[in-house]
Length: 210
Image (cartoon, helix red, strand yellow):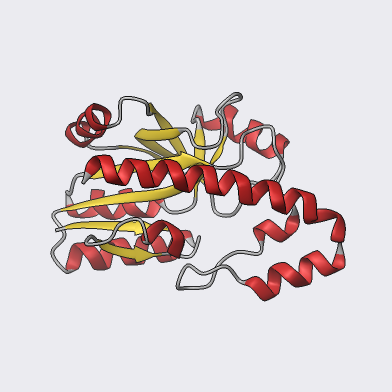
């Protein structure tokens, strides 16, 4: 069994037939879920979903196969056999390090700072917990992510309102933030288009991987 952790339900929906858990954008929950998957007998762990771009020029929908995951606690390498397998199946994907963050990296300045600190091309909230759990149990780990918001684009505050524990958008919180500052609407529409491009790329990748 391969245990997969995603951030939200739209990502998990692309993985029918797989053992998938949704962390809701919570790094600690991603670690707990990955540990639980390993306890249940997973022979490998994977992180799958969207990511924020850190490298300038990476367009929404760009697939990234992580060679390693960086965090402030250190760096852990992804399994080279899985990396090679994914690269063979997804020749359009970028092979590069991915960074972990404790929360949404919203501004272009923060993305640049994280890029300089980590050398990573993208950032997400779940992959560190997954690869940490894999390292604890001696399991192979793979990370496949698709860039949503590019490095140059700032996220409006409403986009950072987060997800619930089941990986669903907290619509009420988003609408409340939007009501406080309607000027966010254009930015939210852009986020939606970026996310759609990333999910489309993930859907194609899932189909290619079978």
